[in-house]
Image 1 (cartoon, rainbow, N blue to C red):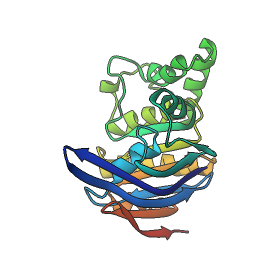
Image 2: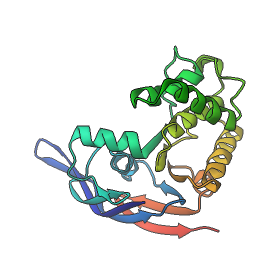
Image 3: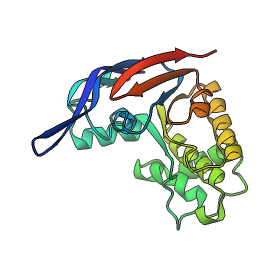
Image 4: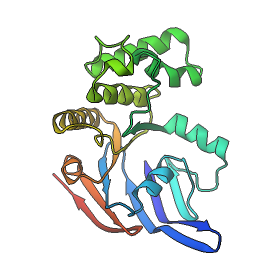
Length: 225
């Protein structure tokens, strides 16, 4: 499903070089639920950008479903993102003046999905996430947990290969955080491949495998039952 080999990322500011990732290697199989953890400055955000095809490595290889992307141009990366990856962000990234339903419809509209199919798919996904009674609600009428459910629904709209969740519970109180992880666990049981980027140990412990990143290197991998 996903393979990263000896990935390095170097940022340059004038003559100063900062190595954000240093020889990172791991793979994720179809149907896995994996967390990537580490302190601030560990390289988590840089790795998330590469995993999400928002950036490319300075060296090393990265393949999604057998397609190498490390030398792709911006328009090719955009196509990979649209086809292969569903994003869930800490800040939800919902359009504020747009209903829950239309927020979920939007990626399908951009992709040219037939109009009736868009609505049918969006309604079905939102109902599966217990948001069927909030279809016409705007984000400011929803709790943080409900906003994140809409964001998850939007991530699922194009049936991506991978759901990439960046600190998905970071803005939520404990109860809502637990409920959102219940959603991810349920999606994983249905066969979705999920990668969670988090600094919270209790969130990571809800996944089946934990990859720990420190100073741009993987220092530990732990499989859980």
